[in-house]
Length: 247
Length: 247
DNA sequence: CGGAGCTTGCTTGTCAGACAAATCTAGTCA
DNA sequence: TGACTAGATTTGTCTGACAAGCAAGCTCCG
Image 1 (tube, rainbow over the protein chains, first blue to last red):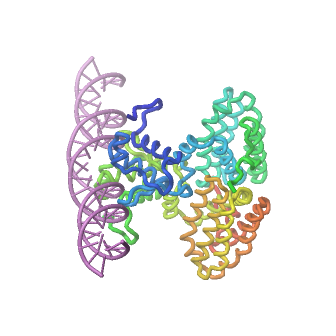
Image 2 (cartoon, rainbow over the protein chains, first blue to last red):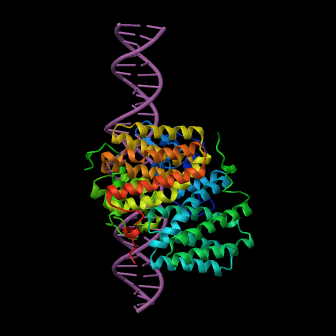
């Protein structure tokens, strides 16, 4: 069990954490419910107790579970998990509807990115701006779709990093996780050059250290991205019908 | 060692994680550097290897360290840690300058909250709105400062939760962590009633399901909060001189 | 028949010792 | 001087053991 199933060799406890984390995301273990006991998990997965304990420790750190001494390890309420944790993100991406996921992600990006871009314009260092410019050049000169998407990710990471506010960084991290796989999905040939101008306007506004121009450029870039979502995946992040509430 | 130092009895591995996490935040172990080996940490803190390993597993899950087999456990680059993780937040709050921390936090809140409020106006359930209204009533009728701050936190958590977008939730969580202690700091008597009207406008705009009015009300509320920061702590989140970059 | 108190068992927390695998270092030999 | 080998170090994993606390079931008394 737990031979290298296709991917690279990872630690066993990480694989166990993946397994339990995915089970929780899939709803196989309901919040408030108890996990199987450590010994049971050992038997089920044929691993040692050490491995199981370390896996549960990881999940505890991400807020997914809570183990009170001798009462068992229980799944916590969804509003308590760290939804921005890369692992949690990955597990959710594997178990939920990708479209609604992309819409929620875009909502967050839409909320944060204009402000982040404005902050970047006023607090970035020369090094930050150089990195941003390099990422833009990478997009402009990219010959393959992969290279273009990689440069695009570097570009947006660069913006969040240039805020010099570490609370923005994890948000960039999450776009990175989500966009990497979508690279293959959105790999339509004519997708590439369309947003180049908008990216350039952003980087130049930041270089001019003009927060308001940067914010405006970011808004335009977001509108372009939204249009791409409509065009390529057929979902509209602004037409909120898709995320209409239950009630 | 590790007797209950003042606070409630917690697991030993959590205490060890705290200790190592704080060391990293304080810069006692520089990124790229290796932690002392497991056995060394065992000796230093007088705990078993099991405990040390589980503590390191928690830190690994938060992106703070990375242990490659037999090369040692190294501290990762700051841009890789999960700065929105509650524990990381707590450690940082204990080791860095509180003022610059509050400014960065306010920057994020300023970026996210207007959009979150607008989304809440369009996607909240009746239950969400009732909870928000209840939190507002709690603020209006609070007799003690503690009760007021608790209701205030519940109010803002309610907004982020009402977006029905889980990616906004961790951000609310972080405000909760930060504002709880600041409760004692900002405990000036006349601080209380000033922002009541702004809160009411927000909740009523959401109840009317009017996104644009909600966004506008949120902006006003933020301006009020910024004024409070200036008045009470003497820091100005919008006067960016305080977070001027190094270069 | 019903409830209070005790007992037992299960589960997590922690400790100790052991071996495998991989990596870095240092020494040796060409 | 350079490359290769052997040893030591460190993390990954397994096993067995005991303590402590919570929950359920059982017993006994009213």
